[in-house]
Image 1 (cartoon, rainbow, N blue to C red):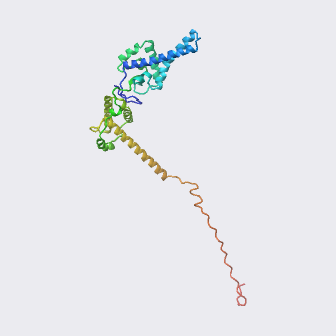
Image 2 (image 1 turned 135 degrees about the vertical axis):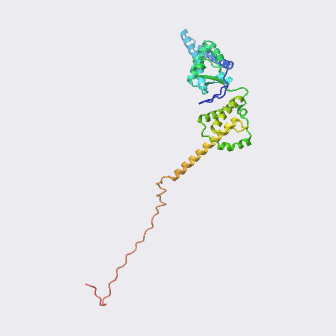
Image 3 (image 1 turned 90 degrees about the horizontal axis):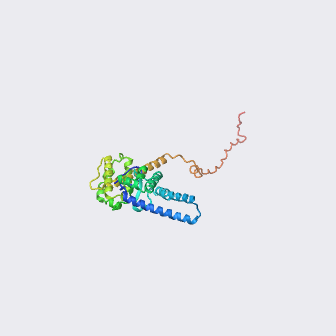
Length: 309
C-alpha cells in the first residue's frame, strides 16, 4: 500500500497495480488500437486503391506510429493517466511522488512501451514488473511513474472509511478545539490533511485508518493535545480543520470591518455638489434701502439769532 501525501498528490494510500491487472489493461488498449489501425487501413485502401508499394509502406508506417505511439501518449496526457483499458479496470498512471503525469512522462512511457511491449513482445515489461515491488515496467522506471489502483475492491466509500461520531462526544471536545494553539502546525501538514479527507472515499479501511492515525499524531505533536479517546482520527482531523477554517473566516471578517472603520474615519472631504450645492447657498432676500436723515431746518427770521460769521 502506498501512503503518499506530498505536493500536488492526487492519489493517496492507493494500492499499486500488479502485473495481472496491468497486463489486462494493456491487452484491452492494444486490441482497440489494432482494430482502429486495421479499419483505417482498410478504408484508405478502398478510397485510394491505386497507391504504389512505396506509398502503401509509408502510409502503413505512419498509421502504425499514429495508433500505437501518438494516440496512446495523447490520451494518457489528456486524461491524466487513464487509457481505455486502465479506466475499465480502475487504474491510473501517476508520478512516483503521487502527482499527476505530464506530457513528458507520457512521452517517455509511450516510446519505451512501444519497444518493450510491441517490438520485444512484452518480455522486458513482464520481467521488470515481476522484479519491481511496485509492479513498474521499464517505461515507468525511465519516466518516474507508477500505475495505481483507484478503485479498491471492497471499499465502502467515505461513509465506510469515516464512521459516524457521537454528537455528544463532539460537543464535549468543542472546548478543546477552540483552545487549541494551531500556530505551530505547518502549512504542508494542513495540505496533507485536506488531501487525505478529500480522497478518503477512495481508500480501503486499513489504509484510511493508518493514514488518519499518522496525520492525527503529527497534528497532536504540533498542538500539544492528543486525540480525545473514542474519536476516530479522521473525524478529529476534520474537526480541527473546520476549527482552523472558522478562525480564518473570523479573522478575515474582523480585518474587513477594521478596514471599513478606518476608511470611514479618515475619509477625505467631498468637494462636490453635496457640500456646496444650492441647498447650502440659499438666496439672500433683498434689503430695502433706508433713506438718510433729513438735515435740520434753518431757524425762522426775527428771532434775534445771527449765525456766527
